[in-house]
Image (tube, protein in one colour):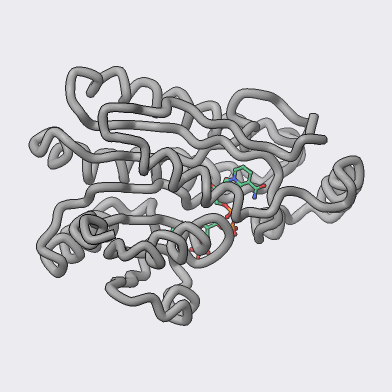
Length: 244
Ligand code: NDP
């Protein structure tokens, strides 16, 4: 606990879902935090101690980097953990989808992750320590109906994470992918096609009408991070037992 206060954690997409729970859990263990998302008031409403909140769109490299550097100066610490968690899921068939929707998914889910990695990796290598956890999905290994572009972005997150981990594998910097299955968050709310939303909810019925409690995913993130620095969990998949 005493050491935790010297480890700065940056979490993107911290205004709801997994990111919110990760923030609350890490904060309860005494870590200083930088929380990033577009809904600033929501993050402020958590009222977490030793926490900076910045309204940042992860697609905007300059704004993302500025917030990280500000937090590092504010706390007098370099980033020890970055969780690239921000993401959007707009399910549809490619033939029916508005190209603006797939652009948003590629921008947030892929470019946002790349931006985060680039912003922290050099200092981590210079310090020869640090951890990046990229949130992908079971849909980053397996295809599902109406998921063509979303799966494309999450397969990309797996590939980018593995590629970066290989690049830095001579160092003590860890790069991990955490891949959840269906969990109860706001994620489905990004999908605009009503019949696909209904279909997704019917699919959830096959898992007993409810998907996973998102707290389990936050717990996995903490587990990956708190392994000894010389141990890297390269990939952790977690899903409801009844999910296909
Ligand atoms: P939520 O919709 O609850 O959270 C998504 C978060 O991303 C929000 O905090 C949102 O904040 C943030 N966000 C979206 N766009 C941007 C942006 N451009 N810049 C900064 N932040 C952004 O869903 P989850 O918690 O479920 O999603 C978190 C991650 O988990 C995502 O990467 C998702 O793909 C992944 N995932 C989720 C699963 C699930 O079943 N829930 C399963 C597998 C993976 P704001 O709107 O305030 O910017």
